[in-house]
Length: 122
Image (cartoon, rainbow, N blue to C red; front, side):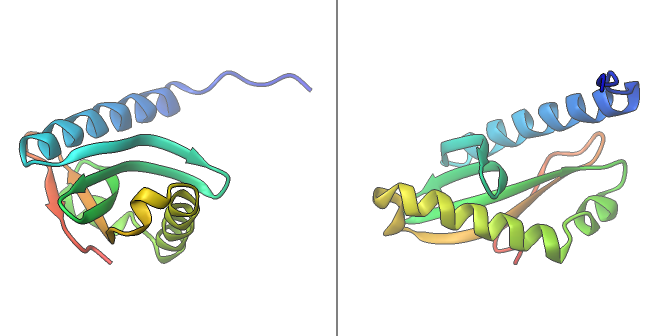
């Protein structure tokens, strides 16, 4: 069966997500975080950004929407569980990270605003 090419809407959403993640990485680096991984694909799902600052390993989910509240609402309980499982998979393969305190953050992106970093989002 032949694959259908992705729709314009899907391509635009992919590009928006890519730009939002790049903006978040820039924002995090300016605040003293070291990026450990970006767009990390695991057998259990993808992690948008994994960053370290001091003894904290932040697993960060990036959401870009037209409105800030829509971005915050876009992280479902099911998605949180998937992210936690993917992070556990990452830590199991990198013992040097396992000693760090893991925190789950969100970064929300809305047009014409700086990224909003919510530490300990869940």
